[in-house]
Picture 1 (spheres, helix red, strand yellow):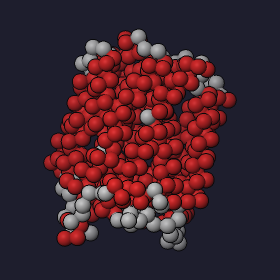
Picture 2: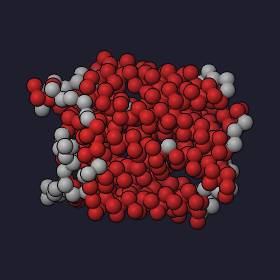
Picture 3: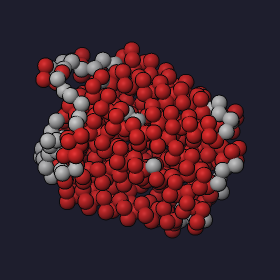
Picture 4: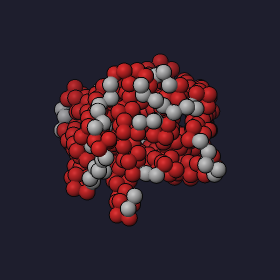
Length: 406
């Protein structure tokens, strides 16, 4: 890697970080506006759960097709097009007049966001050194939490001042600016003759992934962390209003604080864990120890029902988020490390997202029913805690050999 390429890659990493910030800022726009939007459209808690999950319907369906396209045409075109589509969806969302129109704009947002993590994984695989991928991916994934924090606090302020509609449109404009900058700044890496002949992933290759215990272990962790991630992303502001009787600004500030503390803690935790595990150039499969430690640590979310005051609730949320983000970064890096054919990283990431989002999209819906049936969130926290512990143990037992697509 020459000096110019070495300096350029940090620009690319920074742009991917911003892409995650914008993506999750746009997702946070709905969670913080959900109480106001629910009142305007006369929605029950069950209906709000369905609205919260609506962008995931198209997101889930298009994860794999969009990442196959990514492997074929490169991250420059797909990144610019994806962010442009979801940003236009945000602007249109602020113009809707009924809940049906709003759900359609959320589905369009899912179309745009479908290749997001495939783009990020491709950039890390192409531009990050092998020994730094875990740290780079964890840092990039903190953009999700910074986006949720920024989107929540900015959204709460905009809602209080000018309403949720302007909030959506303003965030959409930010995304369009990023899409233009990415198109102007990024260039796909030059490929060798062998790499240039890479063909789209085949159905038989996808099926062969599930014969790999390593891939299945990585997928189980991805599914469980996705479930908790989407639950928190969709319901935390409402949960704080429900549990602590905060106003929208208080809920937004508390949620944003948890995301920021979780992101900062995850970078530190991931870096220390990676240094400890790889201090003697250990096998890449040993990253599973980091994944298991962090994903089991995030199961502390199960302690939330035992607290009823603001500070301990925010502390539990922050610590759980810290472990969850670190686990996600390590698990994503482990997929890149263990996949034998690195040129298929975009498509394989699409496969993992397709299945993990199939589970993740049920989180807002199931939580809405739990709140309607029980009057609180307790059962949701308990279910997540058990699933996270089981996922950590499965990762420890299964992730050992390289992932080979036959």
